Amino acid sequence: MTPTETLSISEELRERFAQANNVLVLTGAGVSAESGVPTFRGGGNTTVWKGMPFDVISSAGMIARDLPAVWEWFNYRRGLLAVLKPNPGHEAIAGWQTRFRDLTLVTQNIDGLHQAAGSHNVIELHGNIWRARCFECKARHHARELKFDNNVPVCFDCGGNLRPDVVLFGEMLPAGAFEAAAAKAHTCDLCFVVGTSAVVYPAASIPEIARGASAYVVEVNPERTALSDLCDEVLTGKAGEILPLFDQ
Ligand code: OAD
Image (cartoon, rainbow, N blue to C red):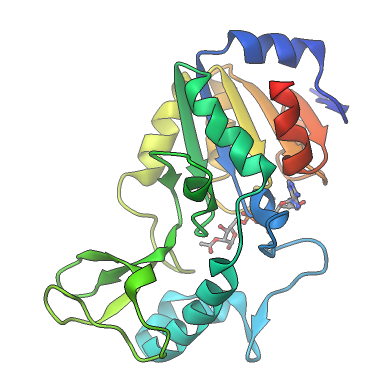
């Protein structure tokens, strides 16, 4: 099957959008690009920090070897993200919560910008940079309350070392997150895949599950991805420009 590729929304998609009850949206770094968050892939943007590639500094091995370095890197990223605001793409998705009987938002992003735009109950597959969790008692704390002094912060409850509550390379997803997303993918009638290169599994399997369950799958991305051929419709462009068009 070859998907319809357009710069504007087809009549069929407008009709499906108007009739849909259960909608699932999967987002990736691209939905935050217009807010100023760099994507991981594409655009010649290979993230390197202090000579270390992203997948080295953000890895389970680095947590074991050098926790202070991981905190320094995450403090740096928190500093960059703290001043960024949601864009019209995040806002459009937040607005869909009241439009459909059931809207499930699944994100691979850790930046918290969907919540800042007003989205609730977001399934965060890769955690959230604004949370820390304790190695010892597993308590979670708001990272906004933590200092940026690059020492390893300690748990307010038990005094154990904290770590960023995000999924690092070589780690499992948070318990239940993928299962909850997959269950919704099985029952949705419309699935949007927004701003993800769809190469990281199991996140990339969510639209595949939706397609297998006969949902209409729509991709929103300026570039083709590994998933484009599976989609019913590909909207070629930026999330912040395309998503608000559904409400016009
Ligand atoms: P990628 O950086 O792999 O892909 C970003 C996608 O966004 C690309 O397909 C771009 O074409 C697209 N894009 C860029 N600007 C856009 C815009 N304005 N609107 C819409 N799309 C746009 O990011 P992810 O797919 O999110 O995991 O990466 C998945 C995971 O890989 C991340 O969560 C991260 C990384 O390893 C972990 O850190 C565990």
